[in-house]
Every structure is written in structure tokens, then in C-alpha cells.
Image (tube, rainbow, N blue to C red):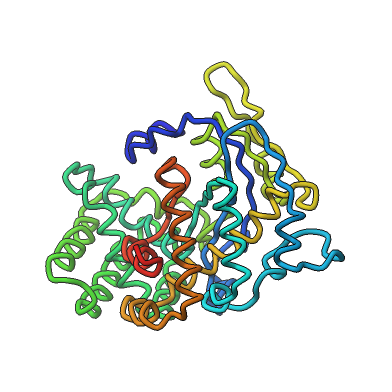
Length: 362
């Protein structure tokens, strides 16, 4: 499961050993299409991640941090709400968030995360189906750009895209309805041609046109109708497989625990027992991850719903406190990715990844 990702992205550090703590945010468990729209009308970015360090296990005492942040002794554990509340810009305008990030930096901890935009993930099967069935290697080079452009078209009018999903029981479009689905998709691309540069528009239309002559769109047939995401368990599996030599300590989440309990991780003949679940109040590393992942989830959700022009305007209008906090977050991301690119995993459009970089001041 790991070899393809390592080869595709040059993840030379995937075999390194770490102690890794996890929490998650925005786990809606399932995303599906109903007659009245999506079950989660505005799904936020799902993030699983936290802090990491090389072995052995460290004592991560939070006493000093809690004292510095003036967190009441009655609070059984450290959570995001104890440090800051509100949207992203409110969080990073709070000096206590800067103090928290500085604490992580001063202790030499790395941060790691896997972030998923649910709507982006839901539409990439269109491009993957066409490229997989057409099997023209030269087009695979452009797969990320094609997905980015299709996503730009489909998220421009959220309501119209959900209506498209409803009309064709997406993702189970099937063989009989496939021609009509492709025509509707081409009509949308044509209607929104102003959203894309001319070359990108021509490339996207050309690839979607290819679907008319294909015998199958493998990821858009014989699947459960109307279910866009059937759980986030696979994203935990991806982390556990890719970082096979790490010790993974996960916050208790019963659905994820049940998902993983049905799997056996093997490295050759060796059965891996490299993860465990822990109650957060017993694990300072998970408490730190709660705050960090909450911040990262709000950061990427803000980026995905904000236009490029608004990101640039926001960047110019940041307060001194917001600027310091975001730069510190960017510094932690950069230092962690330099340590190991595996620490950052994005299921996001290229445009949103670029916007994230710009907001951090990179």
C-alpha cells in the first residue's frame, strides 16, 4: 500500500522511526447526498494529525504550559477552547495561540497532518476514472491540474453541483446514464469557461470528451449510490502504512477503532503492532494534538472557502499578532516537512494548497 506513494512523491523518509500523537477534527463520519442536499451542507476540512518526535517516548509535561496560559486547574485536559475560540482569524489574533506554538517549537517537536477537502475528494473520481480507463500515460502527468480545474468549475456554484449529484445518484452514475452525465458536465464547463485559462479549459474539455468513447468509468459505476465519503478510516490506514516504523498513539474514536480492529498490518511476514489508542487526559501528546489539529482544521477550511483575491487582501490586513502567529505556524510546517515530507499529506486542490502557502507568508 505504501510503495506507490513513496515512488510517486519521493518520500525517502517514510522508513524513519518516530513517536507520533494524533487527534482529529471535522470527522463527519459519512458524507452523502439526500433529496434536500448534502447531510453536511458545508463540510469543513477533515484533519488527522498532531505532534511527533524521534524515539524514545518523551515525558511531555504540560504543567509549565498550563501555567503560562493560565488555564484553570479544574480543566482536566488541555483543549483548543482553553486557548482560543472563534474562527481562524480570531484564533491567530490571540497571543495565547502564539505562546502555544512557540512551546511546540522550543521543545523540538514536529507537527504532522493529513488534510482532506471532502468536496474535492468527492469529485476526483471523475478524472481518475477517465485517465484509468483511457490509459494514456502522457495525460497522467496532468492529473493534478485536471482535478484542480474540474474542482474550480464544480465548486463555483455549490447548489448546482449538488443538483448534478442528485440527478445521477453520484458517484453511482452507471453505464446507461453516463452519456447524459458527461454532457451535463461539459455544459457546466462551457458555462464557466471564464474560470479557467484558455489552455486549461481546452485540456479539461478534451479529457472529459474522451469519456464519451470509453467502455467504462470504473469509479463511477457499481458503487453505493449517493455516498460521497463512507468514513475516514482509510486516511488513518494510509498514515499507519506509510510510517510503518513509527509508534502511533491515537485518541480514542470508536468508529476508527472498529475500522482498524478489522485489519491486520503486515510487513512481509511480520505482523505490526505499531499503534494504540489512548484516552486523551492520560496522554499530554494527544492534548497538544487536539489544539494543533483544531487550528489546522480551521486554517484549511478558511483557505478552501476563501477566494485567492480575498486571501491576498487578508494577508495585507493581518494584525501584528495574527502575522506573528501565522508565521510561526508556517515555520513549524516548514521545519517539519524539511525533517520528513511524509508529515504533510494533502487531499486538496493545487489552488488551495497555493492559497495556504500564501496565507502563511511563504
